[in-house]
Amino acid sequence: MPRRTEADPLAVQIGARIRALRTELGLTQEKLAYESGLKSKGHLSGIEKGLVVPTLPTLALIAERLGVELIDLVTVPSGSDRHALVDLTRGMKAGTLRRLVREARGSVA
Image 1: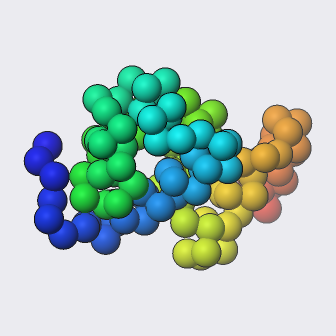
Image 2: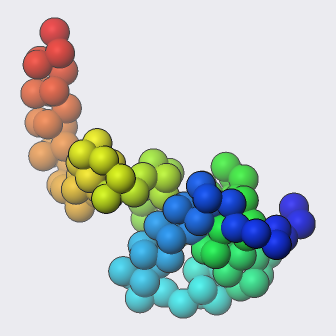
């Protein structure tokens, strides 16, 4: 996909999220691009700037290398309470997540 001359607003949000998660892990663009199988550091740079709109397979590769779920790349914690909740669950242990899911299912019924 050709690089845009103007950033796409949604791609900017996703790119910023990828950058935040990448820096949280102490990864450089070069290392993340190489280890996730992207074409180049420049391609990842374009994604992070919102100049390249990534495909779902590309996002899946990035998410896998960052050790997060795909949903973590498309949520903006400051965007809403739901997004903030998704972000907070990222660091929770599996048992805690299962308990929360059971409780949430019980409150919906």
